[in-house]
Image (tube, rainbow, N blue to C red; front, side):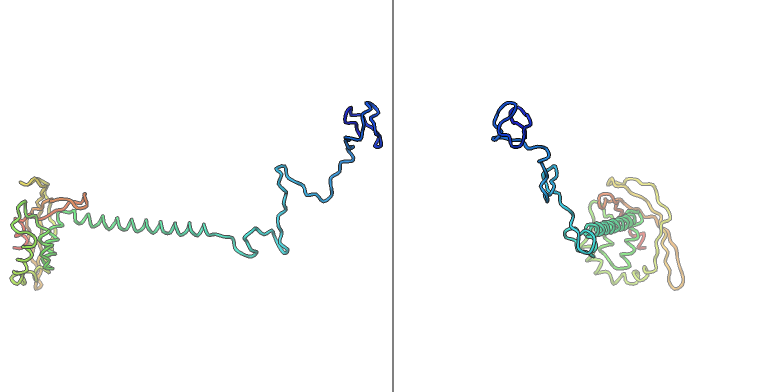
Length: 237
C-alpha cells in the first residue's frame, strides 16, 4: 500500500510510513492489481443509460413492438394519400367539364344570331315568355312581360296554323354588318338572315334584314343580344 501523505510504497502490514512516519491505518490506496471489475456487472454507456440488447423472438427475426410475426407492414398513410389523389383528380375533371360546358353555352348566347334562334324556337313551342325576352322593346316598352304573355295566350287560336308551319322553318345567318349605336346609345348590328320554309315537299327561301341590339351582359362578361322590336315583323311575315 502507499502512504497518503508522501506516496511512499510500504508493505501491506506496515502501520507507519517508513519514509515520513505517518500512520498507515487511517487511509490507504490499494495497489493497481487490486482494482478488479466485479463479475456479472452490466456495462453502461457514456450517457449513463444501460445498453440494452434487441429482443429476439424464439423462432425468427427480431420483432418490433406492436408488430406480430407474419403481419404485413402498416400502409395507412399511403392509402390515404392515394384516395386524396383520386379525389383531387376527379375534382379537376369535373371543373374542366363544367368550364367547357359553361364556355359553350356562353359562346352560343353571345352570338348576335342567338335572339333570332330563340324567337323562332319560342314560337314553335308557344313559349311567349321566351319570345318576349328575345326582343328589345326600347326604354319605354309598349307591353310589360305579364301583359304580353296574357294577350299572346288569348290570341293563340289565330296563330295555330302559322305556328304549325314554323315547325318546318330554319333560320341561318347570311351576313353580319359592322356595329353601330342606336338612339338609346346601345350597340347594334344588322343581320341578313335566310329563312327556309318547307311544306308538302316544297321549300321556299326568304332573306330578311334584322337589327339586333346588345342590351346588356350576363355573368358580367357574356353579351346579351336582342331583336329590335321594329324587326320582329320581318320574322312573322
